[in-house]
Image 1 (tube, one colour):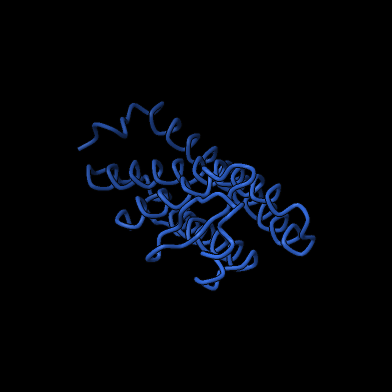
Image 2: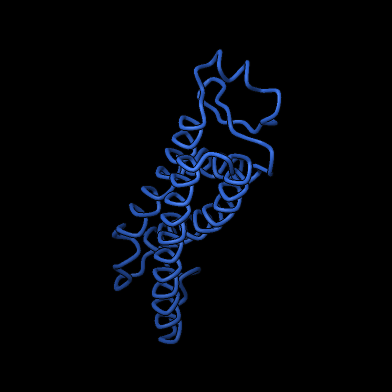
Length: 168
């Protein structure tokens, strides 16, 4: 699971880097930010349209959401009764992953909003972008709530004299 995280975070970082007047393109399966103006011929040659651009971004964001969902369902976030070092290590990794995905999704939301400015004249594309932004906001809220619950769980264990970082 940890192997996927760097790729997911890299994709979210690229999406977050979209500025007004820029768009996304794909090169060997990796997304890149390019200036929208003047890229029409290259994008047309690649078969990329506004619709495929939004779909590309949505696919990367859905991977991040699926990853976060798997982490939130991970047994290592729920069974803190027997604290051995392996369990503590996995709990901390999962918690850190969840926090990083939340930050990445929140930043990607900004890039998607700026992509909407680039395509402001296309109501269909704007509708898709608004739906994607709503989905990101919903899932970021869900992740924040889960992190809050998990933080309380950690604090509860620490007040009992158990240290999640140094437990053996």
